Length: 514
Image 1 (cartoon, rainbow, N blue to C red):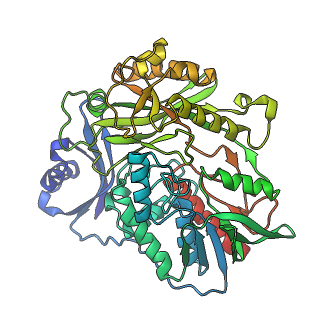
Image 2: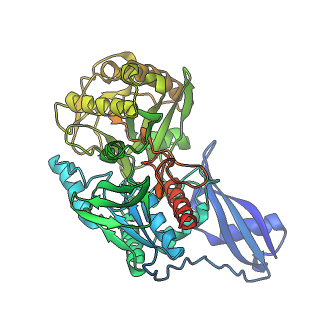
Image 3: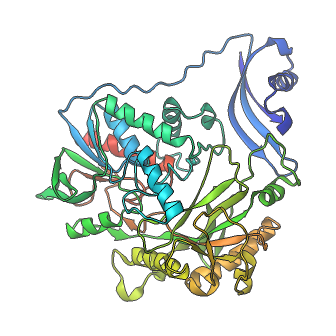
């Protein structure tokens, strides 16, 4: 017999199987010895009072459970049907994997380097302030999510089989707990090996992956895509193209426009990254000075509506660091990441404002209006930092009070910080909404707005400011036959899991098209 119950566990008992058995036996009115297995289904932390774990579990009584983990098989493909996948981020990876499941050969074209070689360029970016436009925190094998720590939480549960995405990650080396944690997280220290394992699966099945292969043109005849040109010289032909180039591939948007392929501006979000000492966030969230050992670094999720626009935390990194996520040498873009243990002394999160069409440049309304605003603010941040990668920053209290920060607290951002009047330099419509939101968030989390909190500019790559329009049913571009816009860069996803789901959906649509 199997029964499902909720078990409430204090942090100090989370790894004690006997305690689980004791609580389950009392709840179900059976002897502890009658319980043959307890299988956690969902695990979350409830910190409204003293922090506790809430475990939804299947309890087996008098029987041995038959628990079969799904295994996804990637058999060798033939070369009768070929599909080009532009970009090997989350959407491109899962598009390639699903194409293989469907018996179709993927030809992956990745502008960056493999995940191991990419790490050396990240080191040069952090330590020497050298920006490689094709190998950075946004571009390279695994995409932006690889070195932005692998958060797997998503609200996109209606877009596809989320469990399958998690199981595929587990099959390639992720910890099995990601299927039971409410906010699953892999960590940037573990993701590269998982990405490398996915790469090997694609290659073993007969797929191709080409690195340092930037798509520089399309081959289109009679409104139908036939292939692409790589690095201005090499021609690749295929039956269809899945365009999963990522939200920072601005040259791809220009290439689409050059080929008269329809694109359009879309709303996005932009602001700053806020950093606190992690012990302060732990104290606010867990209501205690010292965090118990068996609790992870505390997280938070904040959102509000200010003057008709959403203002919210984004990509919160408990025990994490702020990283330079620019893709050109004359801009400042910041993002956050954390390792699997979340053991940095800092907590950081994007704090962004929804940017709507009426806030773009009304004098030059075009497909690139939102992108132009994004670029202008990133280049402004670079100038504020003295034309270096030392990001402009301001204490949160000073930002709200309109003061220059004479000193700045210690930070996790390795290139360093430059004290700047973000409250004067950022667009007024962003500043006004951030100020109101900071005051509101501090009422919800007492201490959130404090002298220890620092705002670092700018957090601007939350999503693509351009959409590549596609048909809702066929997933194909509205004008070009055989072209399937996919993932964050095309404007259809916002994170690792939703991008992976979109990759699978596009692969399925390609199969029907072929």
